[in-house]
Picture (tube, rainbow, N blue to C red):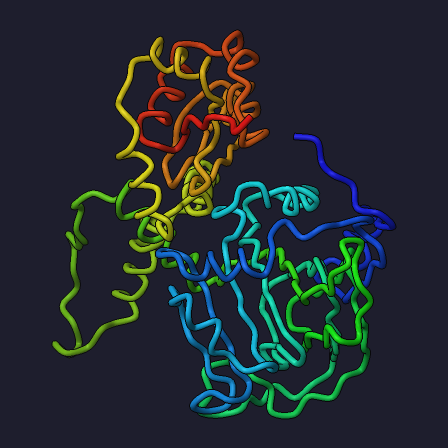
Length: 400
């Protein structure tokens, strides 16, 4: 996949001096940028089932900083106050695949680190309060204006008895007013407060309209060690460990029958170390399955699979002549080198394939079947067909 370039942005300089170190504001990073969806379309998404959407009301709710979760009834949006609320919709790149163009600007970072694309709308004063995130985020101003207040040195005390983690005392060290096309990068653990600005104070866009404040957030999450170790142990239990039990063939008579001796502890240290192997090939398989997992979208993925007939390889090729084959928007594709071949990871599963096949299949969500066919061996063909029949790859007819 060709990586899109960000204006006024040096990738090498960013990775060396800013990534996970300090904030960076890039003015006019996306010249002529138009929001990929309107405020009404965003609200429409928030009314759909299986969509992760939130309304945050700083004021005029039952209590300060009240959070409501979708799906919402359409009339909810006609009953909102004029200011100081926000609508946030997550995983937009899966719901509207055309918005992946925003994510593609950040392909200088590996796909396995990507969390999601979230898009938010805010009237005047709308925000989610001053807070701290534990992940990296690129904030793209899509339309309207948002004032960002930033602090790298802060007291991490939060307000009690509210739905969000709002900092109790927040004093901005820097302030930036972001316009459409501006980009703000924030590393983890930098306090920030983004506030939607009044439309009445804005000039009109080229269509003669005053723009709503809409912001895209491309998040790169680092999984917590606690979560990863738990998942890795589960992986070992499911894939490696058998029913072997502890054996002590030459036990010593204990000094006291209720004592767990140091000798016993040492035996268990050795015993557990055998089970908690950190063999690189095992870790590679686990990491690929862990980061390609799509359990959060199981229902939507299952619906795609159920609406797709099981076919043979030649039938799949016939379908590809009438419609493009594409990754399901709810699927994740990753790969690793494996000797002279590859391990392909799709939706938490591992497939052994040729390297060229795995690289090409993961290169773009739209599959060029004519380019793929000549490089495939019989195992690759079986994998491609399996991915089609289980819904990880689907046929999409063009609107043209």
